[in-house]
Length: 75
Image (tube, rainbow, N blue to C red):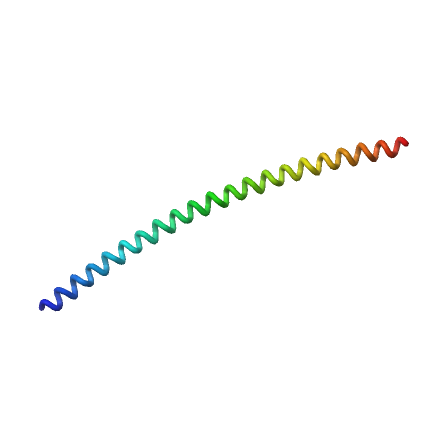
C-alpha cells in the first residue's frame, strides 16, 4: 500500500514537472515568435528603404543620362 502511495506521489511530481516544462516551452515559443516577427518587420523596413534609395539613384542616373543625351544631340 505504501509503495502505491509513493508511486502515485512520484507520478504527481512528474506530471507537475511536465506541466511546468510545457508552460516554459510555450512561453519561450511565444517570446521567440515575437522577437522573430519584430526582426522580420525591421528587415522588411530596411529592404523597403534600400529600394527607395536605389530608385532615387536610378532616377538621378536617368536624369543625368537624359541631360547628356540632349547635350550630345545639340552638338
